[in-house]
Image (cartoon, rainbow, N blue to C red):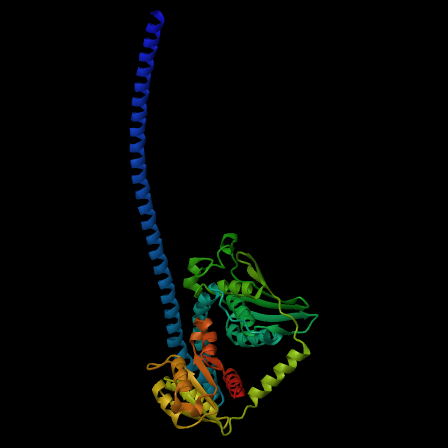
Length: 442
């Protein structure tokens, strides 16, 4: 009896405990269900936010890429629009130097050329900034007479500083050949920027260029006794569009790009640049170019190329020129005629297409940017048209200012069938070298 009663009581307790446990489990299950529902909502919300944010980032990236493309296109177009007339001005002034001028006229012409070159340098700085930041600079490996570059620069600068109270000197120490292999244009660009910078900030005093040449390369030191810089200013001078002091822009002018470009070029060349300066006492820039000495084979090859372009005769050569700038066309026509060649001139692409169908030429020169059809499309039409079969294999040169802003375009011109390019604005020797290379492709 007692045992049955105990068992019944235990049964009731266990039954109650089970019910309590079931209620607790049900409550916990219900709570877990609601938590899962809330968690799912938050997960869906987070997923939606991530998708929205991802879409925003994608749109932002597309806009940034579109802006970059627009900037590149703008630079290319502005390069063409600025360099084309500038090429005409420089070309005409160079033709004038070959004439008979009075001393006053000669001086005025030199001043005109210097002003044009100053403008060209500013434009080049802006275009180089874009090229260098993308690592697309095209380095040419050719013979470079380092001392000739610097001595020529000093000779050009002496008339400029003579009117001021500044003296410029060049001393050199060499235990190896001054004839090196590298990119002469970039070497000259670095030295020109450093020397111009030194002259600008040394209105009274001295600018000294020291050149040390050994087996390791060429080291150039440009020192001045100008306004100098404070330590905090030194930290900013290699930044784009930055001057050591904002007041300097008003007093001395400049784009604030020269030293930034120097550093970028030295990085691309694998060289180095070090600067020290003391406020009110001057600055010292040291650049080291890892340029190997030119071999006998290099010197012989350069001599042959130099001779071929300088003695190039165009007698009997007929060249088809498509150029919408009449001034540039006049310059090119004068250069070709002086070497007994003949220019057949077309003012636009369609006119050139018609002339290409009528007779054969030894060479074709097409401006890349023309109002109707560009130079690339013009060449493709000539290459593919049965009517122009007589010129289907005639070598062609791309005449362009875009190459300065869009270095990768040069490779595109070659891919599309051009034998080479002539960049605006060009010097006479550069133009003739391009012509010689084009005719050699026949």
